[in-house]
Length: 470
Image 1 (cartoon, rainbow, N blue to C red):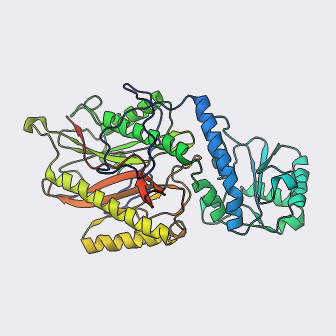
Image 2: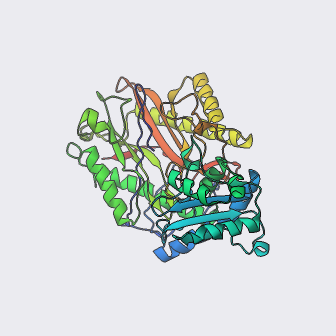
Image 3: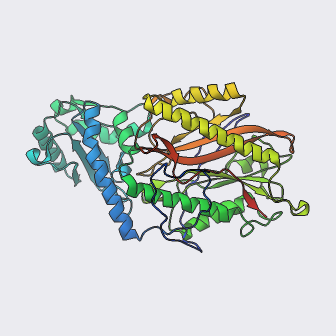
């Protein structure tokens, strides 16, 4: 993900995955429920697996979309509203819009597009849910007014919020036009509730079929990292970090996926800043980063497919051939283990926080208290991951940001939500004796809530050992 990181911190920049159909592709893997796997969390192997044909992807997306539509009336009732009204124009869409379409066949709003969700009986009102109008004539306002007369809502939700982007989807000019054309009776009943768009965007409504596709995407990311962090791609002393970044982008193209951020590869090692900036901005400070034997590499990478996004950060080590190395120095192994311990702490407090209806800030406070008790150093910056729409950093509560380690105004004050996916993103800071320095160990993996275990479980797994290059 992309957050900014300052002194004694680190800036982790998200990259969006691209496409890639690769050598040694395997069919879709087994469809285990979250939390069904036991033992080590690092998968034994990860293989490239092709996505379904585009027509099948479209059918799946529309199935998930219908299930999402069916949940909206319940969300409205939860917050005391009868109608959600979204008015937008082509290329000036509401922030919720991309969570309400199939990405395979619809790419923008058309003309003026109005969505109206309601809590009334579809048969009695004769109004579909949602009712959608696409028009560029004044007749659209009469159609909207007639529908509101039929529903007679007590409270109408519109997406206006001064602080939260996901809840501020009604564009200024479109809002003025909307309220100019709404009968005063209905305009007076309009109000905003930031949690309505947050819950709609955050919701993973597709059940096991959506989870299976997301797990396939995650396995492809792991396979891509394993290939990118190998001698097939990297020639020590010659290849630069930027070379590997563009290799990842090219590999995505061959897989027929896209990305929501450019991948970043960072080189760590003796004599290099251990808590340096990570991401594309690093070249402004350090110039080209040539990869050498003995370096530790970090990648931040994600892919986008089927209106879903992933976000992953892994570490690799370039073995020193002259020393016949077969493993990284023990200090690096210990540093990765401490980062795994920090992941365990975040998972624990996310589970407790969810069960108690707590916020991201509450989780952050308790994780940092445990870190202090255990004498750990590091940064916590977890976020929801987009499962329907263009949002990689998705709607929902934030658990820290790189520069906000004591609470995140607004974003950290939202509650943890069920049926969502989260990116557990963090960096443990550990002393590496072999390098005589404190080194950051940034990791990131995606989790989802599991009814089977009543906890947050890794979608594909988590990194517990280094990718080895050599």
